[in-house]
Length: 139
Ligand SMILES: [Zn+2]
Image (cartoon, rainbow, N blue to C red; front, side, top):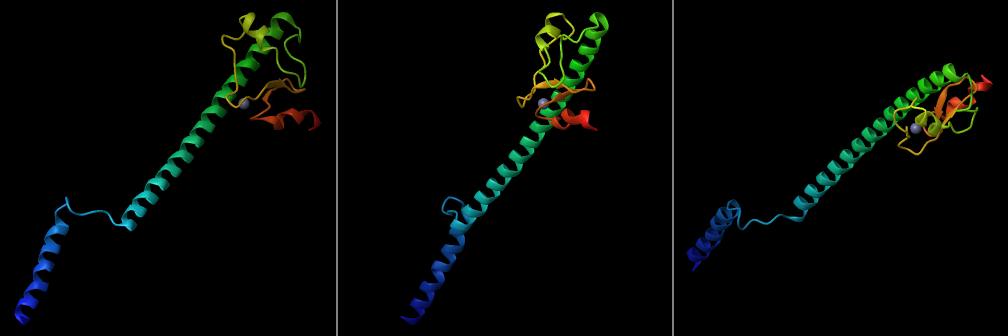
């Protein structure tokens, strides 16, 4: 009886060892799942942070290039018509007029829904990205 008992305890040990190696029978424990889920959540968090940072940069760069082309279009328009009909200080720039008169090839738009305006130094600023330029008149 004693030897049989000893043998019995030994046998399951072997089976346990073998079965844990075969992948078909091994399930994931809760901490393994938690660890994987934390890893995935962390990865998604970092990836989304990077995504929004990239999107912000793209929006800023595209807004900056829009401001540059508006600024060029206005100076060309003023050179040809010597009029400030397209823009007034702190008012929305008449982009339609610039597009219609072909000084702008496309209708510039800020991705962040900013409006393009001129300050008193004839600098184009975006109400979302470069609102600090609005007060350039005071400096
Ligand atoms: Zn903008």
